[in-house]
Image 1 (cartoon, one colour):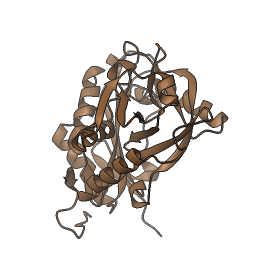
Image 2 (image 1 turned 120 degrees about the vertical axis):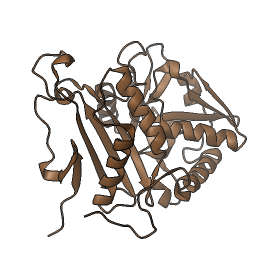
Image 3 (image 1 turned 90 degrees about the vertical axis):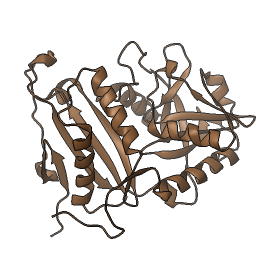
Image 4 (image 1 turned 135 degrees about the horizontal axis):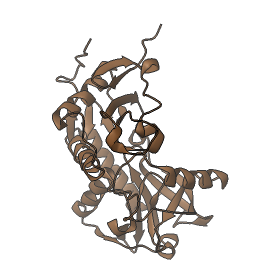
Length: 304
């Protein structure tokens, strides 16, 4: 019988089938918590330090006391990957306010709940090129920065869930959300970039976006390649008339946008600048230079 995957839960490793949280946990009852999605490529956890910074910043913003230190959480992530004998993985780290009563008061939660899940995943960068998605512009608006700001990577994703349902109903792969002013914000779980006249633009923080780890690395990459790039307010008109457009995210990696609202974007496929960025980013993640190694040697030293 194949061994069941292990999950790190509150300081212990348990079988996946036994990894449970209380029905009184504020993460379940109220979406009260934070999380990170992280990738491991060929035995190296990509941009782990940046993910840790964002997670602790998110917890600080919602006044959630982390149950472990940064170093302890880093080791828990690496150990979870090792325990599951993985080299290419998607890792989900979740910290909730913990168990309380049925009321909303977080002060009644005794201690935070923490768990780490690592599952095998194949990278899109192992293929010849990025996927091409057909999108819609959702009627659902991204929450404003003075509401449940998406600058915090919280467990409250209902805003995105409703937009994804709208995309599903329209037969689209994903949805673009606008902010409360009508400017482009982001997709359901990825950041947006567009190319016009060889100039690259991506929505700024004012549009209520998540400060994506992949987004930040793509911005640096574009500047290193000598491309002109601006973080600014982007109108739907600009997006729909772009020469190229693409999405980036930790799990989705890099996805070309073929159409929006049944309007073709550029060639309707992968544009030349999108392909160049894809190729260069693939080289970066596969180089193992920008991450934390899981195993001390090329041959995995597995923990028992």
